[in-house]
Length: 344
Image 1 (spheres, helix red, strand yellow):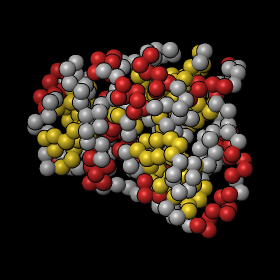
Image 2 (cartoon, one colour; image 1 turned 180 degrees about the vertical axis):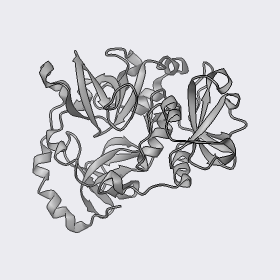
Image 3 (spheres, one colour; image 1 turned 45 degrees about the vertical axis):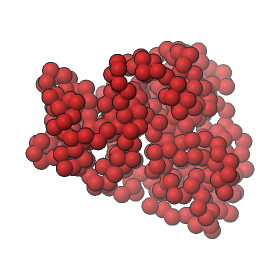
Image 4 (cartoon, rainbow, N blue to C red; image 1 turned 135 degrees about the vertical axis):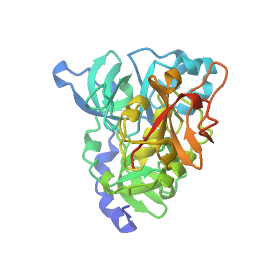
């Protein structure tokens, strides 16, 4: 982990002038010529939600499709039936400042892939559609992405306009990464994709020179991170601290510890090293499949030790689920146990 002191502040201030002018949002510019695709862009909202196609959103989804977004209003404003409707219509999510690759555009929507979320569906990352207004070309920001970055390690945290953190600007998710410019006391100065420099609480982040410098976790480390989300409501396609789906939880927990695993449950079950049930260790992923464990994998959880598992089970027609800590033998899908994989 890289530590930055007050002495780094003057040097960082030299770059502020170029950052104070916001980069234009992709949605605010003319549509790119086909020859300009694919191209790089950056997520310009706290969490961007990717859809299976353009324009599939409903009025209730407005807080998730604007810039800025309000994920708490979105998830809190849906009925159980409206949450269930999202199954099959959403793909995944991407966090603030994350680089994406734009493949196509259709009206106010863009098709992108999210690097770092491996899937057989595309060699460059996980695909989906999002409103173009949630992207920025980030030309100035791109030059800073090679700097040390602040990694958000709490479920959510706030980005602030001032170093004393009295003027909140945006609520960020766990596993958000932003380039670091300096540290001043208990605050860290970071670059943003289009809104200039902002501040984070130093207690909510760790700073690393590169992803390779994130310490390799133990199974207990992964379990402690997963436990941080107990009770968080289930969200289909969720990969952020405002709501997870089952594989979004396991993928994000591993990613925050520097280990990239596939995005979806079936693909997670196809990778890693097989582990016998009587050899399970904390951090191992356990899988559940149709046809009493012999069919296609539909769910994944993380073994927590002592016969327990942490997972994000899907909502039913009558029950809203949250991230839970339950016994392996007493799990709602216990009769569909399909094996385990180790990634450590």
